[in-house]
Amino acid sequence: MSENLMLKIIEALTGENGRRIVEILLNSQGGRSDEELAQELNLRVNDVRKLLYELSKQGFVAYIRMTKGESRWYSYYWYTDIDMLKHSINRRMNEVIRVLNERLAYEESQTFYICPNDSSRYTFDEAFENNFRCIQCGFELIEVDNSRTVQYLKKLIEVLLTIHKYR
Ligand SMILES: [Zn+2]
Image (tube, rainbow, N blue to C red; front, side, top):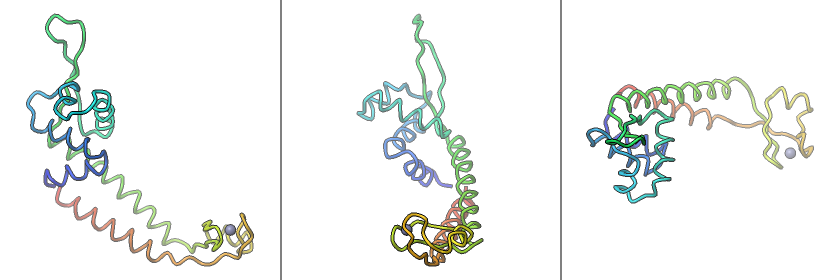
């Protein structure tokens, strides 16, 4: 997986500023403090901290805690590297592909019904129990053609697996 593709995925997950932080940290030696990042990106320190928290939750960045000189206060230095990004993106992709496969199996496993009046969705069992009438409004339910959803999910899984292969 190319660095460019990884950055695109990180941008999709955490926004443009999340991607910019990761980009700076990738090209910095010894990491950056949140204040330095805020200055470089022209953002408020609080916003940078929120982004760093989000990025670290997803495993894209980490920090080391250091004291500056004689000071009793800690500074946090944020860093990342390609391996950390690869690892976290792969973990995340495995999870997404697993959920999509479950959803696909669910969609393929049964017939669904929908209320033409308020768009409530029912499984066959639910529709059957209610004599194929909507619980909300009493309208007669119609069978859903979910083949487009199935096609869409299949395509999406295929695309993700292709990206995954080139990690
Ligand atoms: Zn209804």
